[in-house]
Amino acid sequence: MSSDELMEKKLVELLETAWRILKLGPICDSCLGRQFAMLSTGLTNAERGRAIKIALAMSGSLDESDRSLLEELAQSSENARLSLGVEDKKEKCWVCLGEMEPEKLERWADMVVRDLRLLQHDSFLVGTKMSGLLAENEELLLADGGSRWAEPMKSEINREVGKFVSKKTKKTVSFDAPDVLALLDLAKGQVETKIFSLYIMGRYRKLERGFPQTRWPCRDCGGKGCKSCDYTGRRYSESVDELIRDPVIEAARCDDTVFHGAGREDIDARMLGNGRPFVVEAVAPAIREIDLHKLQEEINRRAEGKVEVLDLTLSEKSMVEHLKKALLKKTYFMKVEINQEIPEEKLKSVLSGLVGSIKQRTPTRVSHRRADKVRTRDVYDIQLNEIEGKSAKITIKGSSGLYVKELVSGDGGRTDPSLAGLLGFDAKVIELDVINVGGEADAKVTRNTKEIET
Ligand SMILES: [Zn+2]
Ligand SMILES: [Zn+2]
Image (cartoon, rainbow, N blue to C red; front, side, top):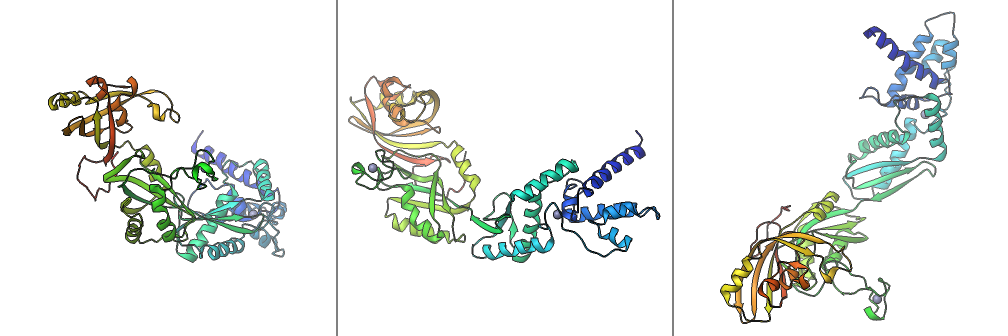
């Protein structure tokens, strides 16, 4: 096919489709143009529709003696009406029933602006809930018009109302991470707003033993409150999560918080050193501009030395996923008891035998909530810090997911090799601290490690 023939074929397809659509009933510029939305960028659908109507009205004017084309066009095209010299009375679009008229869109925008004014935000997104009637009209148009280049009506409404709102408020539209959403309910004629969570990232240090990282509902009553939990609904009265919750709720004036940690330590372990990365999610915050320095001080003051947070910064939702997936190396400091006195040199050489890969079957103590399988983990480094009688202090650096208590006890042969296994005597951890998560192992407190290493 020559390029002329090709062009002709394409023109025919385009105009035939437009003509087929126009014959279905009076249609506005937007609704017509939307059927060609995927063709040619930098135009609004209203501009596309108008251009097509003009081209067709011009074709209809080619033959002075036959006005039938123009007459068919007249219900939808101003140019056709002008050419015919008839009264300029346009009919209501059968597809959107007037919903796409600029005045109507601007009225929606005014409602959005009014509602969003009450919510602190920098970015927003407009969404549309179609009415049954309009959704049906749109389906008919697509089925009978047969365009291959259409976009959904709600995409156009979202975009055009978003443009108006942005112009009026100077706030930006964000598709990925808006602060607020304004949902236009076409059937009800109402705007519903939704505030997205605010994400604050930091690191925490847990300076005392005996409480978990997150809220822990009572197992007997599931949180309702019963005799065994003293009607608190909780198994533990405190958690890292709850120790930072109230100051965040007050600062962001939010409904609740959700705590996301990069892994967790055992209830009886402390989290020292550079702290563990976490994100706290403020749910539906009325305030997004928070003095994080002040918030940090307030959390630390109220946590009374049980928990300390550092390096608070604003973050985003994607960081939660990132934290959950991050494989962070951990360094532990532990006090171990062996039921036999071991000479220092022997203990050192046995410990060095633990460096390398370790086969760990799911520990008995967590087997009720984890799948039972054998995993391979690594011990990167192990140091004997002190030995006194039957007890020893040991620093160990291992891969993410290494169970160190079992590395010492052997867990009845489920972890191999283990300290107990190599010694031939029982051994167990009696005190455990995590002293580094990610980054380089350093027994001293490092307070300014901002990056999360994976
Ligand atoms: Zn329309
Ligand atoms: Zn209970």
